Image (cartoon, rainbow, N blue to C red; front, side, top):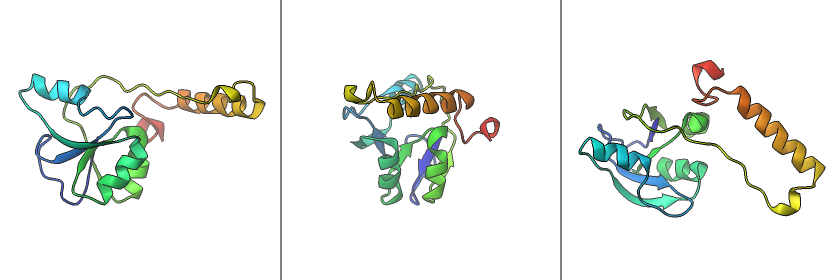
Length: 132
């Protein structure tokens, strides 16, 4: 889904966009899908995480890509979701932690609980109709 600020303009490639990228990359799978249609988007910067991007989008005139997993936060921030009108590859979800937590029983329990909870949700995320 697209999350848009108050200045969202119609069309996938008409808004100035912020991209979520831990490595600061300005291109990704969305750009490849747009290129196949002869379209492109104007990305002006990157943010390191999805939650951070939603706050940037809320407080600017930027448009950004969101996932069904982030929909509840986007809506709680007053952002309006729009379906992505492109066929995109699935987004994988992963966990990372410092090696010193490998043997920590509480941390191992938490990782297991997160895995179990994520396995219960449908592929399109916890905010989907199937995940409610």
